[in-house]
Image (cartoon, rainbow, N blue to C red; front, top):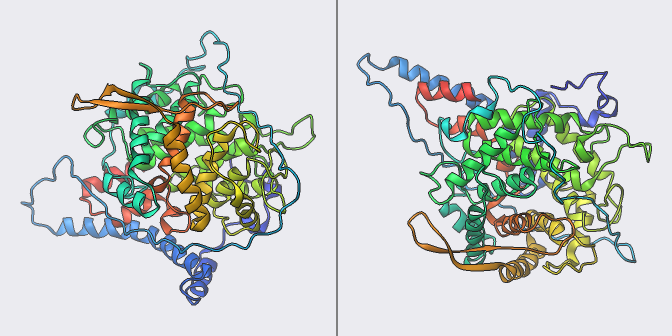
Length: 534
């Protein structure tokens, strides 16, 4: 693992603003914030900090108290059962009121059209490409099926109950989803299941498309457990297992695309999968996948193709690619939420804020490898929101710039020929902001995507043997692995209501497993197993 020290290339670029404050300073800042008005940002940040500081103490004291109580029980206490179902009921996350934004003056003229290069055309196969390039260590995941070693406590730790059937329904109603959008999502899940390859992958860019499919299933609350996910649990399990078996000892994956967009997408999927299952096999794979991302980050905070931490010979500087950075940032955020403890993770998250800001236009917008106002504006806006910088002026100005944007499934756009790729980010950015802008976008987005879905009637069977419809999307974007990529990105947008924790809530910044240990009631055997797996 990489250690940030005086000899590391990142160290010279870090300013005191990115150093971790001491515990005492955090307590003082929290005390000041709690004295502020209840609806001020300082007060909300102080409440979140209070939860952060109390969780580690509770995570230690609660298990110790339980162990002490068990030791005081009579000797004839019956032996604990082999497995105990545990259900956590975290409180409903508070939702901030919409924020009215004053629109800054934008630049005249046509927005910059970025020429991002998400090359998805499958390369010619190389002999032996799908085989590991080095002997696999004994503890590697290749020979350990994901379903063979389930989590000791099967629950949705990271997202509480928001992705359960009841949670999805409640949040869909709260954020103005509807049954038509949900029906389109379910048809897409059946389509993905019907088109899954025997090895658990999806063609043709197998690592990237499998990662996107896993994210799509997880967003709907589907986990690799047929008891909890009778319709799609097997498909999710085979997909995760494919990623595990495709991973090399260095954390990268066999069979990636030429620019290796597939790596951060697969890492993102594995981090989120661990957050929803606490499966120790998935944890080890996710942590391995994070290593190349953290090591490949530039001192400027960005990333480029193949996570190459080197100066671009053509420009003589680091090439910070907003499109590639978007997937890296989402993977880091998912890792943080899942409570993964990869070395350098927190520093990489803080440094990434600087990377996105370097591609921001002062009047709003984000460019490809420099300041701009094109379609990648949604990427920079969402990622800064996820990284804890939602109040920065670059985000506020970009949200104002996107105020006039409208969802469309037409390939013709002022932002070039990758409209659906940009919409994936824009939908999430507007959702996290909320307010009138989100309501207007959502109302139009739902209608556009539901209407654009291609549907086959009674083309598959559900777990009960009944005929069901399947559906998919296929657009004419230049950079797409259609129809798998198009289907996943469209479905993820229609699940935004319950897929994402809003970035204004404490749950969005508190790692999941730590919170679970602080609130669960477990017997001593379960505590020992969980601590070992964490």
